[in-house]
Length: 241
Image (cartoon, rainbow, N blue to C red; front, side, top):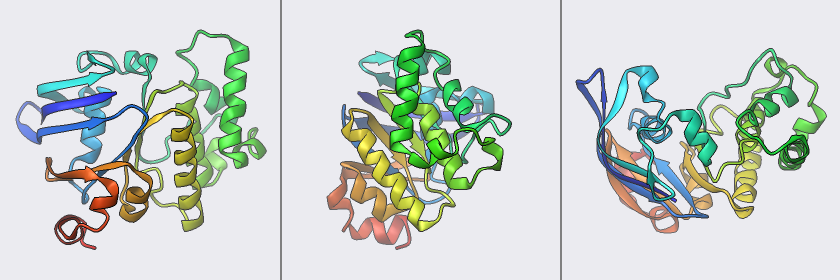
């Protein structure tokens, strides 16, 4: 579904951040993108989503193919319409809107009618039952876990075929971490392909089918997730485990 081919990313046309990164995400799979802080995992996701220009960044070399078509020249909104949707790090919600209003903003690009959108709101509530109970609450006054569920739910309202999650469990209590991972597994079982950036290495490798490891903007390790789970290079050199 996604093929990133030898991309280089520059900031301010001078600072080289990604250095010949290549990775693939097979249709229906879960791929974990791992690495220490500063390894440029978030930059990789923003390159795929074409969100770099807001930070004076650009893909200076290489190609990004989504569903067989080059997409690095498309706008972020066009990528969403095609089914490539990113959940940013940091639980970004519209703080002044209710939980349900936040979910409805995720359907902004859709043209399939209110009934279909209503069905998907109910689907999100089935993934995240706490959101149903808090549907009328102002998002800015909800807990961090509820805001993260809301952010993922809003992305699902765009009907993604590829869902990219950037640190979805960052700062959450352990019980919520497990709930988020189980929900991501359910979403994937329901047909959504997932590219996951995550610092919780063991959980990510247990969830994912494949994994890639970045170090200082370079891809240094890739393979089946269950094999990397016991790889001493991953433990020693890249993640300090």
